[in-house]
Image (tube, rainbow, N blue to C red):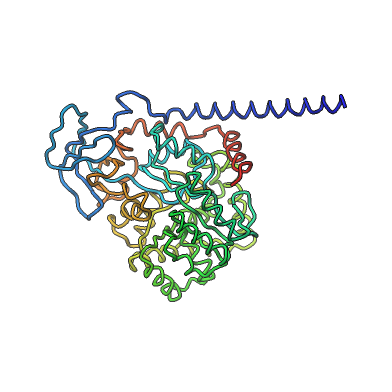
Length: 477
């Protein structure tokens, strides 16, 4: 008995030491991202400005309002006019630069707070995180309470899948009653949206949709192969993810534009449905296949180290081995990428609300930086610069009612704004490296934004990231 008691004490001591060590590691990592904290001083805490000498691209119409003033009061756009007189207000002279709404990335996967700075540096002032974990609720709380500089943060709950799609990243639903319980639970916990994924059969899918409608929470759908593609056009489902899912499911990998048109037509008839193509993440499969050294590239130094070590490596190995077994797979992937461009072209022509999403944060798809590549692909699909910019601003803001306060420059809207050196309606690349970013009316200049990039580059938080992921596994989804 004494030996058992001694062993129990040793075990408890080891567990206590591991818990204490974990707490210290997470605390140290939180201190390293304290540069995102909103300091209580005039430079960073101020959320009221009068912007002068600025050319406004409002995005509620295809126009430029020349030489205007924009009055931001406590984070809200109060007035836009030729002349505005306000007493005791900080004035920011834009020196004839251009102002646009901040960009919105509608499909991201956030792994740490460093990535929040990367999104801001690239002009992304709102994100929709589509793989919810407890850490995301803490980020959301800090954003809502104005504790940190961050894009406006929306997140789904955990991914809802069927019974056979096993993985620690999924919640495997086994019955309609369980499906309803999870929807209710996620809404109560503070998740903004529900995400459906592979493997949901008709009975469980119906239960998710029914409860989401009752609970008044929108659904984002990564299509399930267990139901017809048209099943994802239900009114509670506000967006469908990935152009590649059209190829994989209804087309069954047949790159047939005639068959494609009937699918596009069905989507266009569903007026509440937005589509997020996420072309960049699929194109990055091709990039991995033609660049054997991509994991050692400088750009990958901005990826979360746990994701780079596990997911990036796993994806690279998968496609490297695939091309060794069959060299034609490289051409097939390339051809499918161009077919995705054609899908965007047809979606746009049919009047479908296209929303910009990158799938940033997984594989080799960089958080923040990738949005500019995604927008470039929409340009290749034949959209004008204005139409391209709409996908990451006003189109995105129309997808969910909880996003209606962003996406355009109008009185009463949130002051998430970019100051650009040149006109993106003429040169799309002007969106890169904004000279200033306003987030809820607070101004971040280029030097500060550059420092966000440097802080995130080659960060050493692999263990801290693993601990947060472990938390997700231990806590009931």
